[in-house]
Length: 385
Image 1 (cartoon, helix red, strand yellow):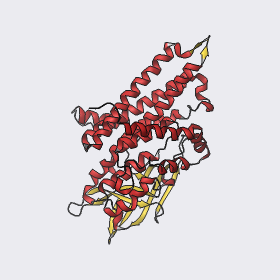
Image 2 (cartoon, helix red, strand yellow; image 1 turned 180 degrees about the vertical axis):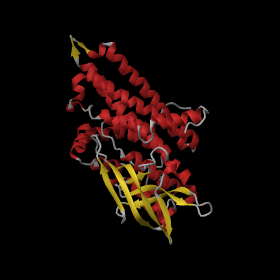
Image 3 (cartoon, rainbow, N blue to C red; image 1 turned 180 degrees about the horizontal axis):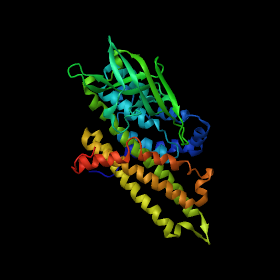
Image 4 (tube, rainbow, N blue to C red; image 1 turned 90 degrees about the vertical axis):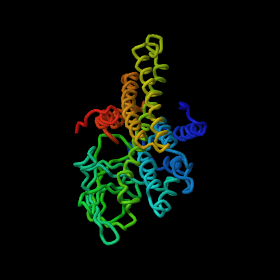
């Protein structure tokens, strides 16, 4: 086992970090507060190949793994320029299509993912089916050679920027009459497809939406891959989602920790930097330790996933997502505490992160569901639900 990253990824991190710094947190906040989008940063990252590092080379991508894409996500977040759609579009959607899509689907969508020109949202959560995805009621019925899709989705990120949405629905098994999951690519301009923004108490350039699918007619090739392989396809996307979610949290934790440490070195009270006081130094040191531990688990999850060990990756990805969310909350809270009143002043760029990092305990999978998974699958405890 190697605990150091290859030179290529280290170089990738450095290049992405320079790109993020060239925009900076002020750029991101300006877009978020004004209702704007981080289009310029996304487009440049796409042109430079950073968004497509995990897309197969034959379709114009870098041919690397989820670990490299996660590194891109982490570095952008660490410079205060998070791109939430990275967790969804190139990680979930491009991965699912690359692994399970038909050749025509790959040719149609993957080159756009490689350059960042294609943005695709992912829709699984429903009003009555949050963590319990087995209760999904969005259904797809055959309509000649095509499909008709009906249902609702909630808390779907980035639909207003997306060209299409990868929708998790259900089809009826002709033999048993039972519903089984299936994935459909739905262009956002399809008749019957509507979305409405959900008001959130978050300062973010990425918005959340509710989806309404009312007799949405789709061609036969909207179905991703094989109808009977949907469970495998679904988890092929959810593991990268958790790895990317962990990396997203790690990047924000690094941003907050850097701000807190810099302030602790510069701010002087009674003639000495406040960082000399253990009451501030020790909590910052604890954040650093927890950050490095969470980063190692994230790298383990990515390594297992790229090696094709989906179950092992699932366990590690859940743990990484849990650890990343927890350290991000601690990092932001301690950075604010280190700054004192300045921690909530707009010019210091920390106050808006308080709510943002709290989201990591909820999405893309809640802390409690992760604990359920670890209890049942890692510890062998009886199923509690």
